[in-house]
Length: 299
Image 1: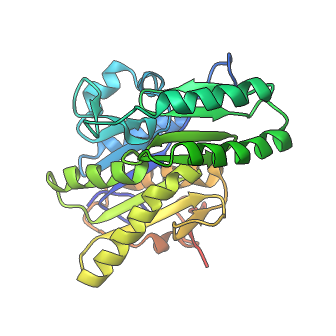
Image 2: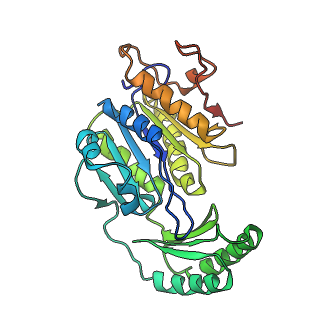
């Protein structure tokens, strides 16, 4: 098994790493410590590490230079635009879903333009298979009220199309129903299972767009319990909020600590011992004496 926790765990780590930025500004990106933790986990051939992003593939591509892909491609993958595209083990991006009906985009764009003209500081982000209306740069109360109204209008005019209208953090996104992180995780897990056994899955995210994959992970966990499969499955939010995820970390700093703890165990010499119980993180002490962060069970 691969080391993913204070004891050796086999697994797949699904981390949602998005980048936000105001229009005209340079978007933020995962910092070097985060990248190094991901690389350390992917270096262990028993692990498969995926980062699921809502951003465009050109931005996601910049996270890892060419030499990183060449060294870690077998165990490191990314998706862009909530799973519309993925890159894993190959030099080129591929589509997760081959055929998409995008006839709805012109109708939706016209309405988004109307709200952009109405609400100062908002803008439209056009992606390959989705549209996003951003309002982080306007008055937040006014923007949130307009976003709720926009969501209702979009649902009305697009009711005959297979799309979802999804409010998020200072944004409203419209995308095909067949494209979401839950679909992406399901297809990727199937692909991984064809290559090697999977006995541990940890899925972490901090946004409403992550709920599709949390629901998928929850259903997999229930199936494993009913069928007595030897695979432990955990979904974990960053921040305590209503969610399909069964666990949560209080803040991003705890996620960083958790990744570091998994990294340390993945490269430790004690690889013959294996466990797949995330609850063993609870209040244990590392050999250095520092506390290991706990993914708390949601009540």
